[in-house]
Image (cartoon, rainbow over all chains, first blue to last red; front, top):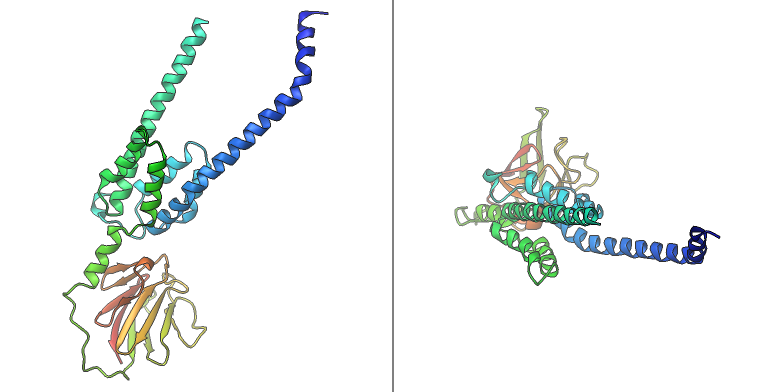
Length: 90
Length: 202
């Protein structure tokens, strides 16, 4: 029996466990991300609505990493339909 | 081994560079956002930079919620301009029995004249055809369905925006849903969407 075969046979029984742990970790990561996104979506929805944009833009927080930046960019660089305090600075 | 170490260090360096660029971008955008709401820009920038300190991300998160639900100075400005002391007080000699009239020109060129009185406490300005006796139809595409609400209390007349995208203006000042009902008894013109309506007693 070659060394490679011995290695595979040694690890084979652990494979389902490793797959299970990996899946559980991914699921926890996903749930954690959704919870954090929800905490961000609620206030951002209100800010977007008060600015005059659709609150649905805040759902971009569900997009990892880049989503929050896109929402901020829309609010920071877009003209607010409901008016701005200093429109001349835009 | 050396090559892997160098690659790992490069990756970490790249990650840090992205983090710095992201932080600067976020701080800049936060400055602009709070500035548009009428608050000092440095408060937004400071909230983002707080993530670099020991307080982590909790305090900026709390500040985000506070910002979302607080009263913005932007919302105060048009109200002050509308309800300032420059407006004359309502005429005391007006009869309670007199009704009100809103008249103006639609974007199509057609004219509209709407009469209403104390027979109902609230009236609804809408771009749709009048479905209720208290509906005041302004058949223009820029007018929401419904668009705004008029309230009559004795000799006083109030106006509340219902959040229609076309916007509501009182003598040129924007009225937002957050402002609630505003006294327009002494106002000359209101604008719903693109339609300017002259207010008078009938």
